[in-house]
Amino acid sequence: MVPYVQVFRSPGSPSARKSCPGRLGARHSLSDRPHNEPDPDGFNELFDQLHKYSVPLFIFSAGVGDILEEIIRQANVFYSNVNVVSNYMDFDDNGVLRRFKGPLIHTYNKNNSVLQGTEYFQQLSTRTSIILLGDSMGDLTMADGVPSVENILKIGFLNDKVEERRGKYLDAYDIVLESDETLDVVNGILRYILTQT
Image (tube, rainbow, N blue to C red; front, side, top):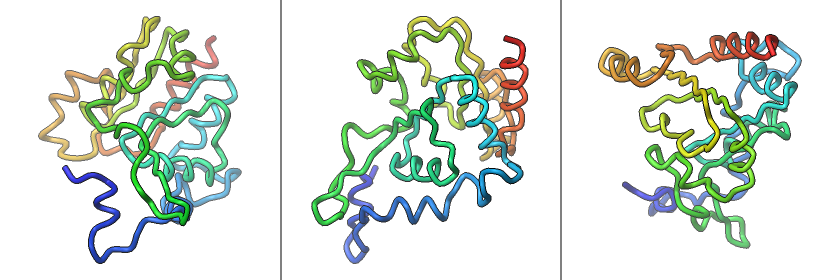
């Protein structure tokens, strides 16, 4: 496995700069629309619903946190209930990427070992129910170690090698969405739960 920093500093390639996350976020936004227009993928509805009902939204990603946060900011849904745990870039005084901060998060360490002792983990520890969204088998452990959880609904997004992976996903996740990159099912479940309580 090649470390992210090495990829960014390959010979002959330009250095990653502090201004890059904003530019990348602009190209890879949750939606290319203003916040008050239709939401075909359901991302804004998800963020809005959870914010309205003060439900924590925890994004645990092996990607680049700086870019994820920028995408969420540009979609105008970076609410106080949103917390991103991911790989964050560390820049030198000239704004050039030096390394990534802290231990790198990857598919197989997305669990409480990375979170213990954090303020956000304490907030989650009072929750009894979790809806876990994942797109890999490694994502299934993201809620491991949250002490008072009684109910976990695991929703898997199977978008790659569908035929090959279907059996494993059906065995591991409660709901499997095949080749569906929207949050329609998740939002429908949330609408039902949030209006029934």
